[in-house]
Amino acid sequence: MTDSYVEINLTKLTKNVRAILEKYPDYRSYIGVVKGDAYGHGMRAVKAFHNGGIRYFAVSSLEEARDLRSYDAHVPVLCLEPVAIERLQEAADLDLTLAIPDIEYLRAMLESDVKHSFKLHLKVDAGFGRLGIKDKGEIKEAVHLINNSVHFLEGIYQHFATAGIFDPHYDNQIRRFKELTSLINLREIPIVHLGSGVSLLAHPKIDIATATRMGLIMYGYNIGPSSYGSSVKDRLRDLRDKRNQRKYHLTETYKDIKLDLSPAMSYKCRILQIKDVNAGEYVGYNAEYRAEELISIAVLPVGYNNGIGHANYGRVVEINGKRYPIIGEIGMNMCCVKIDNRVKLTDTVTILGGGISLGRFSRSSGLGLAEVLLGIGKNNERVYLK
Ligand SMILES: *Cc1c(COP(=O)(O)O)cnc(C)c1O
Image (tube, rainbow, N blue to C red; front, top):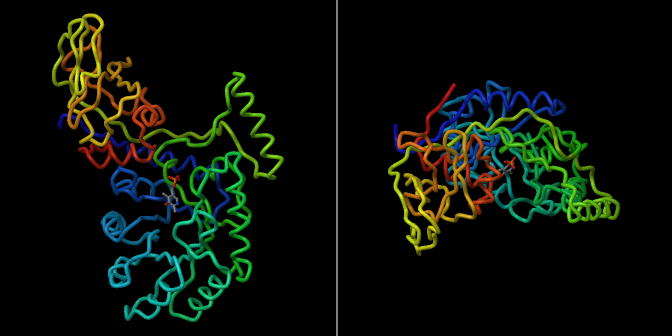
């Protein structure tokens, strides 16, 4: 066994997807997002998701699509980012669905001499401000061009900039999407997908949507919003939300959503050394940590080389079901934990998973949720559990 390793539970991936499809049955298609090497879980995850009922996937590049095809030769796969025109033959060979981000790309694609009838999804920029067409005349023109070609306009989509948790951007983007598609007949396009996981959980189904994309939730993380506590500050936040709700006529927001998800990834390591540190001695870079009394520490074989980031804002690990604090700055390949006499050299340390939730890890490392999964999943040996 390597000094540190990522465990991926494939059964949990399958169960997560089943739970989602059961709770949200009203879509024609569910597009499983497996970019970033399936959020660090490895493309093998595709088989587990397929077993759970996912019949459409999305990736970010030809390389990811090729990797996916080694696990599933036939399932439809949308490449969310435009494939370079000079590589369209590769996309054809992989039978990919192409995203169309603008008219110029569409024209170049239509003029290419690749002999293949592609499925196309038009990307609309309804306020995210990244890829996509943001002119309704151009959208009409794009639909016209595609309908008069050998290709098939299978989908149209956009991405939300915010989760719409009491901010007006979410609703503005829905309105803008409808306005931008007002010159075409949306009903003629089979797959209309606007939102990702958090919109599925936090808001009612968008009337025009026939599909939804989802990432994090499939891997086991309930990213829906929670209710505030009962402190004065929390009650003021609640009042502010209710005021915004009325003022901007916001879509309803669901909190504390019950959904049976469990994280499929955990990250574990062995201990390299256990030692005493005397009162007044320091631990690690910049002599940032000073022992105030005699303590014991465990040195772990894990650092930012393993994708966990270098910051330590009160991070903890779990050993035999108990939490212990990481002390000092995290190095490239090592970090130190303050332990007690219950910890033995042969114990296994859990860095993510068990009692260390992704949310806690994210806050204390200063990394985003998906960033944590990618960092850990892509930089360490993976072990798959069935
Ligand atoms: C990454 C991505 C998703 C998945 O988002 P989650 O928040 O993980 O559900 C959906 N749509 C697009 C366009 C994406 O890039």
